[in-house]
Amino acid sequence: MSASATLKYRPETRLVHSGTLRSQFGETSEALFLTQGYVYENSAQAEARFKGEDPGYQYSRFANPTVAMFEQRIAEFEGAEASRATATGMAAVTLALMGQVRAGDHVVASKALFGSCLYVVEEYLPRYGVSSTIVDGTDLDQWRAAMRPNTKTVFMETPTNPTLEVVDIAEVSKIAHAAGATVVVDNVFSTPLWQSPLQLGADCVVYSTTKHIDGQGRCLGGVILGTKKFINDNIHIHLRQTGPSMSPFNAWVMLKGLETLPVRVRQQTDSAGKIADALGRHPKVSRLIYPGRPDHPQAAVVKKQMRGGSTLVAFEVVGGKKGAFAFQDALKIVRISNNLGDAKSLITHPATTTHQRITQVQRDELGISDGMVRLSVGLEHPDDLIEDVAVALKAV
Ligand SMILES: Cc1ncc(COP(=O)(O)O)c(C=O)c1O
Image (cartoon, rainbow, N blue to C red; front, side, top):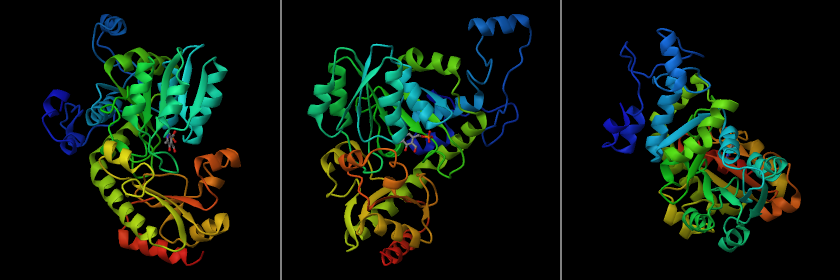
């Protein structure tokens, strides 16, 4: 169904139907157009297509019908005018930032970022003459102080990985806009179900679709969303010319993933809340962070900007690294993996895996202690998960 035909429906309905381009065969499930190129009726049509005078596809690095279905469906759900899909989440983050800046520009970002995102901001952008300032995302004064006349964009992740710290999107957007900068939000940890950064004032939202949007651990992907103008001016031409495009196969997987996203994420969030409550009372857990609980450090911001909690729970096991390893190794259902958003519950020890590359001082600043683990809650029965966690904590 076209965007105009589905606009009147509720989000869940639109996630099942919008964007569908049904072929002449009338298939129920969206077709996978696994093609690199497209043929033209005649030379004149080829010429017109390249001139942009004839609508239609030319080459799948530029656009593809299956990828277009995914882009339309996620854009509608996010409330964005336009979107472009990318090969991975990191391709989306890199393009969302690189597509906007020129040598001499400045970028401000919160320090609690996924490691590769921090690398892009702190090491990759400066190589091309783009300076960056890293701030504590929860401290609005630091955002204010970091703005310069040449600040082009600000970048944040909220909730953050792995400490689930929450940044106030609306307030940071006001500060950035007052300084003439745009706002890019990595919304991976919240998912489009629980948080809508564009409605809170952001100019661009990025996702690693590898996480909850696929939701079953199969394919890598990313997506960048914003106004038509933002996407046309900053993203489209770079994607087309530099080529970090999403494959049609991955787009098809993501498109089908969107149909079940609300059901899965609701269930996973519900289970995560129950696990958080059980952990909150446990003597072997010295610290628990879960957005949605009144003891979350930014509970007021969570209430203001999120419609639901999280599918992730971060907690500190007593006994430091030894305690965390003993706990992880004793789990039977929950598997050790650095991924998240999967149907399978996954656990990671950030200090020795995802955040191993940064220094101890940086980890201390971010609150990533040696006893901290990050649990991504899957679709197993919550009682089995609570039992698995409780039995494993006995090994600590
Ligand atoms: C918050 C966040 N942003 C971006 C990425 C990068 O996504 P991908 O692995 O699809 O490149 C990840 C991956 O773990 C992530 O957690």
